[in-house]
Image (cartoon, rainbow, N blue to C red):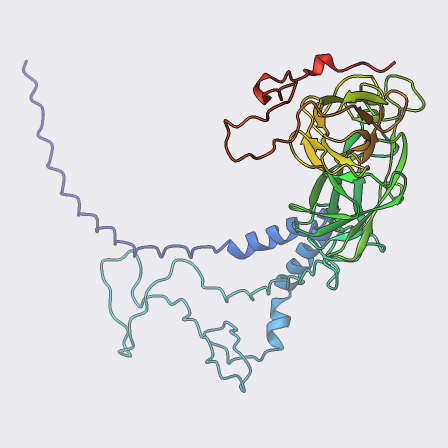
Length: 446
């Protein structure tokens, strides 16, 4: 048995669903300007405002925001628009009132396929998905107080030493910090020492000047020398500093006066005293000879041979001078002046009339003395470099006794060189045949 299924009726076509109306594009959110907030945070950090103070300020701002209606009402109220209250500046303000549009609903029904424009031909309102709020009041930034840094520079002097005794400006020489070195006590056993003068300003820096420094003797050896010159003398600073050598042949203390003649003030040591230099005895330990090793001294300096010296008239006598220090060593190249104290006009020294000057070589000098007249001649030998007289071993000035007739007669002019006198038993010897006594033949005095 066949079973035939009945035909089902066709289902009616379903009506098409209306298309979903397109929503209007959302307006982008206004960009938040955080610069002012950042400036406030930086201000708090810069001025080290505490957290509690920051919270207090934030609370105050919050209260102002909450009560903005009250604050804004003080500025003046504008007419109500569409049920919302908007505010503007007072009527006397030159700025225009700001009025924002209110949200409106289209005349048609959202979600239906039919839409009819407003009947009053008014402009179509654009749907706004979010309500529009009145602008927030602008928070005025807290004014930054002007920071005035006090200056520590004295406008009249310009120094920063804070020393009321030193009031000159930077780079200006001043007596307060200017000193003489080495630090006291200053001693030397070599006969000389280097002294340094520093000219400083009130900042304790060497003043960049070329001042003239006067050095004079206050007490001590009158023959003290500075750079080989007798006192007083002057030296010049280079960039505020001067160095000079002080020497003395006498054991004892020498006190100097150092004056900055350019700046018109005295320069002292660190104890505010005039510098004093103590020259100690030499290594020989002789209390009569007090100069240092290597410095010529009269005590052991001698002329030999010892006087009186006997010589033949017309002969030559050699005098040897030794310049020695207190250790009995030949020293220096001093200048020696040999002068005659007698009135012998025929006397010559090294072939010249006296006085003559020679320079000692390694402390030794020689003088060859001749005279054609019989008699005693006396002499003075002076060390002009170190200002003392050289005597013999007996502490006497040298003297020579010439005796007998001259072995070299004065030649007599004749009419003919070949003419010889007659009747003379003894011929006159020729000068070429006359023996000349040598220095070694000079008799040695007893």
